[in-house]
Length: 133
Image (cartoon, helix red, strand yellow):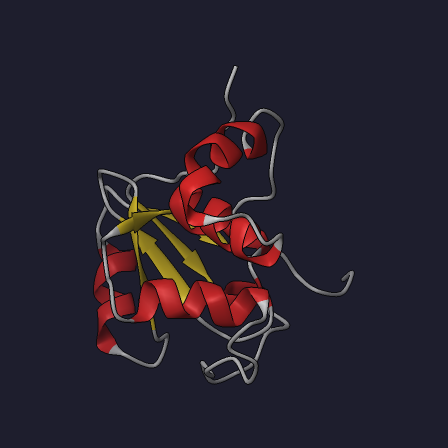
């Protein structure tokens, strides 16, 4: 059975102990930098599964031609969801997943986030904290 990390009609708010202002990851080849690169210019083009498996493949040096097979192996066991992403945990970004599970980065300082969280059909979750309460 394949596992999934996809969310649908969901907003993931930044963790309570994350940066107070959304910031661009300093290292483009870090997990946060790779996730940011996939999402920032491509809103609602990728699901959480797409982003997490692609970033893991890049970080593990998996060639492009082998990534579909790698994705199957990657999701053959449970993986941390986007609530544990460094973008939401430490860099201060929110993420919105639409009805098809495709995601977009949202700057919490923008008015967009307020509109998304007011929608009764949207589930609102907090990213995981970095430190224990």
